[in-house]
Length: 391
Image (cartoon, rainbow, N blue to C red; front, side):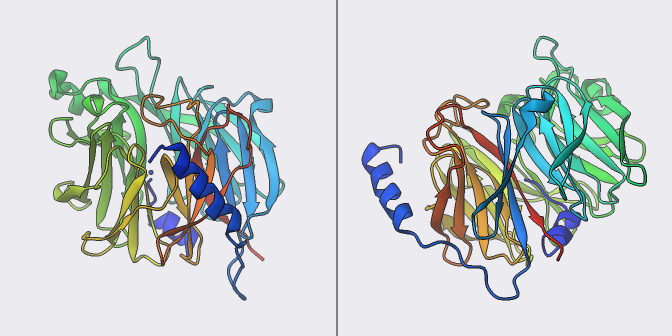
C-alpha cells in the first residue's frame, strides 16, 4: 500500500464460478517453476496468514524457507508487514491482539512484541529507521478512539519502546470539522521522503473514511480531508518522484484513487481503479509503474508513475487480491489472496485460494498461486512484503 522512497530504496532499496476455478487450477498446475536470472538480487517473500497466525517465508524460487508461529507469542490476526531499511527487522501489526511484533530477519526470531492498542491495523517504519508509527483503529465499543501510536527504535541496544500517541478525534484539525469525520479509525499510512509528514487514511468503511496528514515532528495533524472530500479508506503510497502521495478507497461498488502534492497537501489528480474496492497499491522498484488491485472485482490497474495515466488493466491476478509487493528486479508482483472465511472485510473479501499470486510484471499474467496452508479453511492471507537478502 503504501511505500515511501525509503521502501523504494529497499526494493531497488494495497469470476467466482466453479468451472473458472477448475480452469485456473489446471493452468497453475502446468505452470513452470520460477527461475532466478543469473546475477539477480536475492530476496525472500514474507506473507502473513492472519487466519492461522503464521508468517510464511519463501525464497525467490518459491520454495518455503521458514515459517514463524506468531501466534505462539500471542500475536493474533497478523495483518500488515514492513521492514527496516536494511531489512534487519520485520515489523508486523497484530490486528486481533493489538500489538506490533518485531522479528529479527537473520534468524527469524521474534525479539519483542509491543502493545499498541485495540485493532492495530498497520505499522510502518519511518524513513530514518528511528521509529514506527502504528495505525490503531481503537476499541469498536468506543467510537472515535482510533489513535496513531509511536514506537521508538533503539538499534544499538535492540530495544523497542512506546513513544508518543495521538487520538485522532482529539486533534484540533478533526474537531474543527465537527461531525464530518465519523469513526476516525486510522487504517494505513505512508511517509513523505523526508519523513516529516505521514498521510493516514481513515475507515474502515468508506463512509468513515477520509484522510489526515500528520506532522511527525510535532505529532499533530496539519490537514484533514473529510469523507465527502476524499473517498479514501485504504492504501497510501509515495510516488517515485517523491512529490506525490497516492491514496485510494473503495467498497462494494466503488474504486477510486487520488494523487496529492506533498508540497501543499492538495489533490492534483484523481481517477477510477476500474473496479470495486480499490485496495493494495505498490510501485515497481524500477520506479516506472504503480500497481493497484481491486478486491471485489478481482482486477486492477497499472498507472504510469510519472503521469499517473492508466496504461494497463490487470485481469489475471487471482481471486480476491488484497496486498501487493514486488521482487527487487521488478520482474514479479506478489499479491495476497483471501480465504473462504476471511478474518477481516468478510462482506467483501471472501476468496477461494488463500495464499499469494505470482504475476509476471511485463505480461501482467498470473504465473502461479502459492498456497502455504492448502486445505486449511481458516487460512486467510493479507499482508505481504519482500525482503532483500544481502549476500
